[in-house]
Length: 289
Image 1 (cartoon, rainbow, N blue to C red):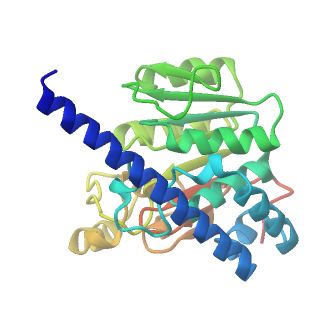
Image 2 (cartoon, helix red, strand yellow):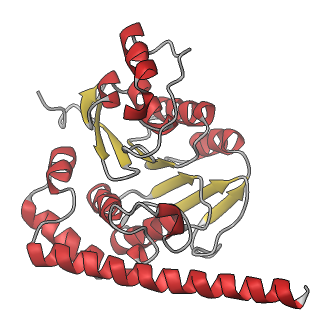
Image 3 (cartoon, rainbow, N blue to C red):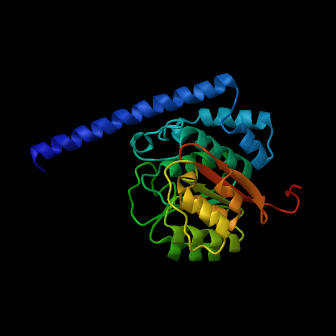
């Protein structure tokens, strides 16, 4: 490497390190503010989705704030510069708490994440699982291996197409949560349909909020023409492919609202700039009128 290229690379690493330190300080300040107000992020949404009470949420918020490894690399609260917050676009610190609370409530023994990149959300999954689920497993899948924040001693990483991995996993193991951050429409839809078929009790998604949009797939057979027309006229109001798949497979209401209960699922979108979504399969005892 020539001296100029070496210098540029070194400066780039120094700038990234500085951004990461700044991000940790911003996230810590945001969490201190949350603790000071006594209002956990997404408290109303989490109560509705999980059926938990305020003391439970307060305890979860304290436990989350006390685990810097879970949130130090996450994007800043409602940050408009998600792609430059430290390493890459990720869940923000509030969405991170929603994920943390979900793990505390469900105690999943096996979580599968599609779309890993540097491992920012994988780090969060790992910290939450370590806190609440002894003997857990975390499986990561991506076409490329760019991990920096989680190693082979902490999770099973598969560098392959999810379309070849998931059938093997579903035939041999009980997946408790499937997390989709993969983006391609066909892969997202197929993976969710497979998870539903194989009785996965919880599905989670990133990029389902009110950020930049992809237009809806007009060829979909699962939404009415009125919904497609509304989407076509003003597609900036709706979400990425993840949100569209949620609307197709759970409820069309999710195109214009953040919660739905239909087809045996209770669904909540925790809206921030990009958004984190969760769908919980309802058992007979948990279904609400």
